[in-house]
Image (cartoon, rainbow, N blue to C red; front, top):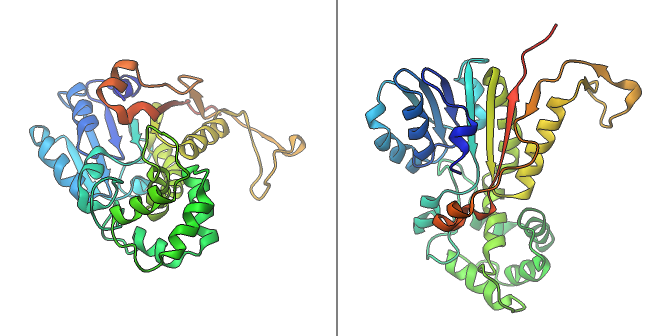
Length: 303
């Protein structure tokens, strides 16, 4: 989203982290706007993305550190409390969709892989092979928001052992679809759910929000761009917890007023509502139409 760098409040000499560097577009913008001596910590779990971004950022050599890892691991190598901003641009990247061999696309022939990090074992085909019909249905409904989850799960279970490629799966879903015109392919939500499960995307986000927040100094900003309602919900809950002037004791699962402990708020919303992409940006990049950006600023600690 074009407004991300503005919301990150990038300035010369600032120190930042891009936890989802991808092809390096945002990272390049951060380095340019923080010149001449700003610093960037950047990471991605996709090896192809790391190579692409390393080439793109070559002109800024000496001003960034690039690692292949999940952004949930930021705390292991980025100084705690030392950053002016952290950017997390979630979801699947355009190159991942465009490269057929990665298995993310519903309309390109490739293996049913969908791993963002090809060093991990679990692939999409493993889920299709080993999860039972009920588990698949729940997955498609909860992570994909698919209304016909049961229908598609049944169709897949009946073809167990024969689905090896993306086109075999997308064509099966298309044949099983109840019909009716739609601007998106009927297999889109199934593919989304599989990708999110393979890569534990919600779990990574839960851990990554905490890791990113711990890396910020007072006044630093956390900018998160989501493309899925479940991701956006996690970001909202995280921000709401930090902005409260009380905390709940460990082990208590409900907000019981009598058990609240007063404390200073840790965060404030820069924008109370999610920031949507402009019409111009959606026209230029249709994939941005479902993007939502939320921005939090770390409050100074008060004794």
